[in-house]
Length: 489
Image 1 (cartoon, rainbow, N blue to C red):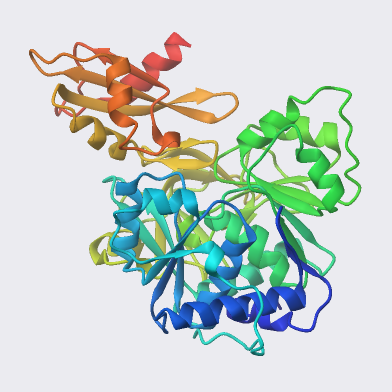
Image 2: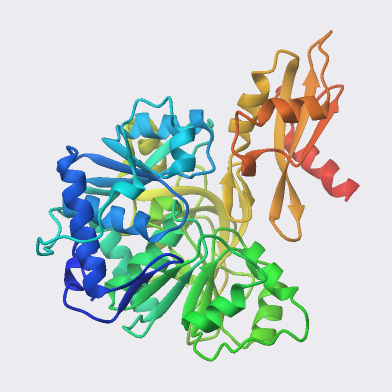
């Protein structure tokens, strides 16, 4: 059984085996444990106590991981902030989470210059301490992670994952993927995502393995990194696998240590999976989950027949039903909303009891995703109830972009939808109708959005139209807009 999440660093205190590495540091178990202790003492000196929240707005680097474990040492929760967010977006997360402080580098400190939350420069945190590492003060029902995900209203919500959720998820993943001390994850996804934290950080470290943190994915150097670091697995989004499939035919990396790779965040075309496995000779296991399920719920089996185009079977200890709007089971093989239950399901949304009650009904998490089971029990996702756009693994909610467009005085109506993209999965397209007498252009609207939205949320295409289509009850008909994009190619 994996080590309890809050105790992972202390469990490595006497180990000389590799633990955590990035472009700046290479820490064995003992050095990692010492760094967590030093960070924890520094946080404690700045007033962090049991039940507080520690934030970090950093790019992928070892210090973010160490800060997370240091917060847990004190019984505090940890909330990672996307460093690509604007001031307004980041400040909302800090204020909503009531973060005691936020750990920053120079870039994020500049973004947060006007924020009321105290900042702690990453360079001020020590890596060594004379104090002995010890288990964390966190209890199973203490909040471990606050991961912010936008909702259908456009207001980001803090998903509350407690230490019991994390421990359950680690045990579930261990049963499915059988991590060992020989495993080394190559982390390529951003550390403000639950996927990166659970699959590429906690899973290997809890089982005696190690992680190499890449600041970002670079197609040109990626396979060299896999080879040189001796990675045994990595987790990525479909856009990354599409780019790897497009590599030159003479590029033949040595992947002899790579046990498997994982694809999540968005459905991946079956043909793309087949292309990857045929070319590189490495099993690609696709799964499905949400932040609200502590990352995972289903997975194609590693050592049994897989079904590309499906997201696999329910993972051990997780129950899944396909239900109608009333919450009743649909007929076998029919499509309906995916509902799941298990020890990995979140506590709820921070400070949003009504929204929590809406998605957590009778012990079941209503995902908002539409799927169906086949005769062998494999789940296929067929649609999303929500209008969420997934671009390169990033969840983008149209309402947030629409709200920003509505701040422009010339905008009367706005609708944002996703357009299929061979590389990124989807691109953001905005349709805008102007007020009578209003004057603006697509370029002017794009400039208007730049300071209001993170770059990855900004529309790739803005179309100013005379009017937006409506359905029978007067609501904007987004299906017609999506159909128009498909027709236009």
